[in-house]
Length: 444
Image (cartoon, rainbow, N blue to C red):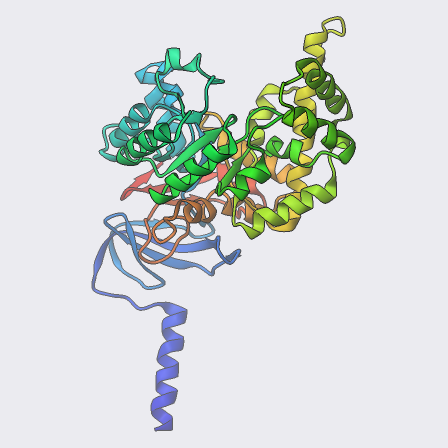
């Protein structure tokens, strides 16, 4: 009996050390892969990954394969998500540019996007063409149009892209629009800026009844009709833009004035503008670290995710592009953009300490924007592994597809990026791609 146990343990040890070769032939075998485990934040010893029909069927055993990729000395990570795009805008650039840009996303390892604002027919048709193989591009999980009460902030965008933004002024509007979005494949909705609280609460509840998560952008830098804390209280599932926290975390000296003006029966535009100037002049000194920590703890408790979108601010603000002091409008814009950047970074640094889940999203349509966003998140103090999680497992969990997406494990989609060095030492390693396995094909 003792000899049998020793023999069994020896077989187990041998299998763990050397794998067990099967007679099955798979489509692709990735050999000697050091897998970056985005869930546990570790890197495995070299293992073989067996792939058939675009699915990981096994890890750790040897297989015969039609195609073999030797990854000796290399690392593998899951396909990346960009969690804040507006890809419908590519339609304005022409078919050739649209197809080129979408393909470049894939070639950079961005195999999925969370698209948070665009005409539902445009974005669903684009996603269908990608899914059917007519064009190359990332898989799109989308909201459809931005939703807001009248008057619409981005109504001029509807002249170029009809139904880019859609008005919800009544519960009947909400019922109609949410039904259409659900029927046309949306997996979430995007609420933007102006709503009365009772209508917003109804929209969120109806979205959830249709299994649609809620992405919320409260609007400009200050004076939000549905501020971040209220949106979370009413059931929003993710908050877009680091600057969105600004009015919620103002120091009391500014907060009392801000809220009094916001809640006044008749808006005092002159007083609002004056206060904005004062707050902007104070920059990061206008906000309270304790209030950031408090809202961070609320975000964690309610399992809400944050998408900072630093890249969009970086494209607008150039510190060296100092305006002409005689142009007051330019000077104010420069100071506003600088304050938005500084406050966004400060807020995210503090939220990160509370354990808020951060998503990687560029708020743009540039293939290079995803990695640029990752670099900016690192500058804000987020660790390499948490940045990588924000582009892999966390988006999959937020969307509710982590059973098939977001990490490298058996029975998940075999969308895999092979890179030449560890991203846990330097997130920039993600740009040094050796090969990509996507939809059963080997790219590059």
